[in-house]
Length: 170
Image 1 (cartoon, rainbow, N blue to C red):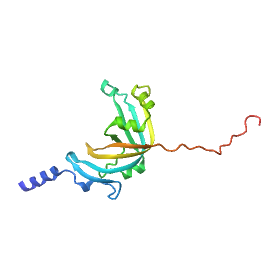
Image 2: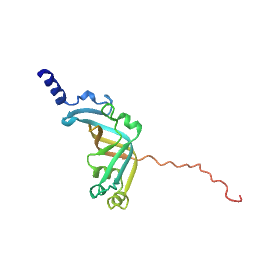
Image 3: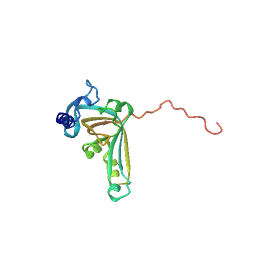
Image 4: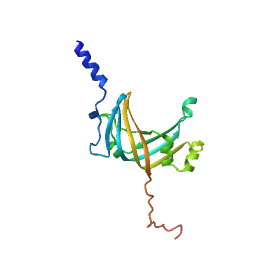
């Protein structure tokens, strides 16, 4: 009985093994280590397409009402490439340093509007180069913290062959 209890103890004390994470072994991110609390730290950089949303939360109390949240919502193709635990795909990414991320993604004028609460929500879609990828699952909720080092907005399309229809009476 003591042997069984010791085995159970060591099993849970060991935490999540490195091979429990799903990621491209030959991809841009390599697993560096799994630290205590089962946080996986990855080396490398990865491009992720999606939308950064920076918004003031309109909560029901004073604490929530003054909360500013910044997150990256990756697109479906990017979600499939992100390291994660089985059955816990990454749908939302937060930043290690929100201010640094905001400076990379938004202009100074847009940031001033957001910080002064003249604009309650800012959105930027495009491709984001991420590094310092850290992920885990806590209380059945996966999370990822990263640093964003580059943002590329999609090119604006212009239809140069636009033809106008004849107006009234023509």
